[in-house]
Image (cartoon, rainbow, N blue to C red; front, side):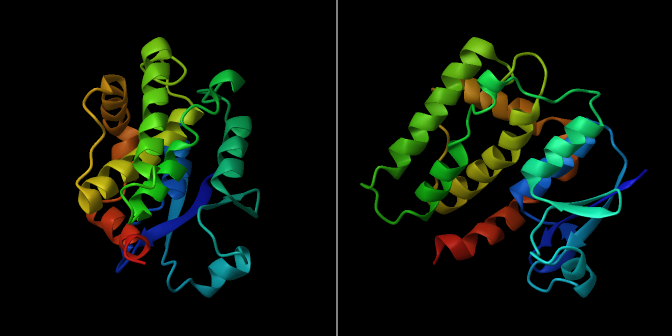
Amino acid sequence: MSLEICVKAAAGDPEILGDCPFSQRALLTLEEKKIPYQMHLINVGDKPQWFLEANPEGKVPVLKYNDKWVPDSDVITQLLEETYPDPPLCTPSEHASVGSKIFGSFVKFLKSKDPSDGSEQALLDELKALDEHLKAHGPYVNGENISAVDVSLAPKLYHLEVALGHFKSWTVPESLTYVHDYMKLLFARESFGKTKAAKEHVIAGWAPKVNA
């Protein structure tokens, strides 16, 4: 049974994979588990009628499984783990929330117009906590093998690197060596290369939010 998945197309180029980190998370899970799938690129600015009929909320990603459309990357990745348990990507509960506040902190800092609002420090604190965890447990969050938490973090760290680099000339401090090594490790994976959005599409995707 070949699965179908709808993901965001690039803004201005509906034939190219877009910049949604949650879409990439679902695609990474499919790739890491070597599950065959058919991908539909959805222009979120002009959603096709069939897509809205199948998925009235209109959000991506959405996975077609057993003739039902399943939305939400949390639900999709859990479903894939249960249905295709090999290779396992399940992260033990004690490590499942590692890095979970990084994306929210990144978005707040990215949108911030006030250098003294503490948003940069909040992001640094989250990255330092990840660095310390990786020092103790790495190279991945759960040791030697990639797991669900890494698959979730990889697109978010990519967006963080690209968007903060472009809009704020900001980079992850060199002192966080374990985070740097972790990002290199994730971004070098074949699955990541196949599912990542081009940097210019990531920048274009964040521009309206930064300039709002």
